[in-house]
Amino acid sequence: MENLFIQLIRLQLLLVAAAVSAQLSVKRLNDPAIVAQHKRMVFESWGDWRPYPKYFLGVQTNFAYATVWGMWAPKINRDYKDGDDIRPLKPTGVQNQRFAEVKYEEQEAQKIKAASDTIYKRSVQDFAHWTSAAVDADPLWLLYYKRMLKPITEFPDTPQNFVEWRLKDEQTYETLNSIGTLKRLQQELDMIKEKYSMSRSMDMPRGKRFLMYHETLLRWRKFVQELRKHNNKTTLLLDYKNILKNHSPYALPTSWTPTSGQQIIQNIMNQYKHRY
Image (tube, rainbow, N blue to C red; front, side, top):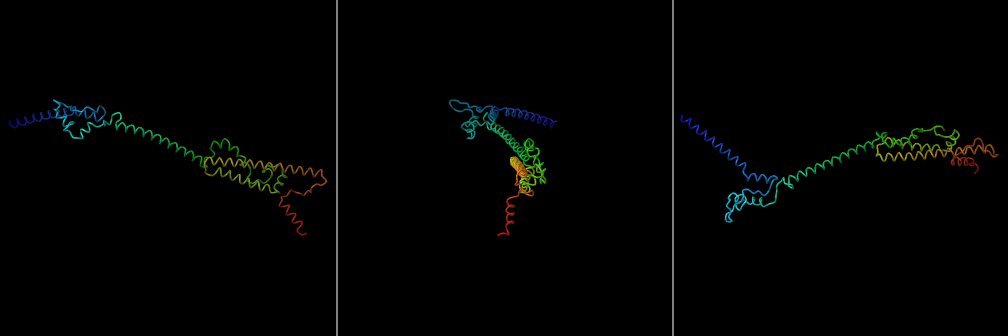
């Protein structure tokens, strides 16, 4: 019975100690000085310096204040009390500055992303215009150059008669062929078709491709104009020949055909080479 009585007393003492400890801990958690420190650490206030000072006849009588903030306090405490407001969550605090910087960096990141997306899209567009695989889909080609350069593809590569050369008749064809004009026109035609083929098959910037289109178109127009000019001149020459043949006593022999300057000189040399 005595041992049981001692155990009961010990149990009661433990319960009392636990209750006192709980009361002390609650009192410590709700200490006004600790609460004031928490306020200084966040955003509420900076000047609540608990514990407060107490004076009697000009002498500090609050030992707690003297040892925490007063003359007996460590220098770091006094510097903290007398220093600048360093609350991180105040309107101009470090934490708010960091939030503002993060927001600014997010905006800058969005601008960089938008710029990179624009560069990527532009590079894709440039590649689409650079490669020859997409030349048929270009709007400017479809609207203008396809129609303007179509006669080049329809013109034969090596015309063999007056129909393919778009001449008036066979006699005109023979006349131009005999004086070497068609040979020179054939060379020009080959260059035009080669330039056109290069502009359609090579990989190059879009602007350079359309410059080649335009240069090809100009050369083709000049070629057609020259061909029409020779056609008209030869037709006029043949008309004069027929007029002279029918109305002049000095008609040209039937076997006469226009010759080049080199052939005329060669004929003259052959005619007089045995006389001198």
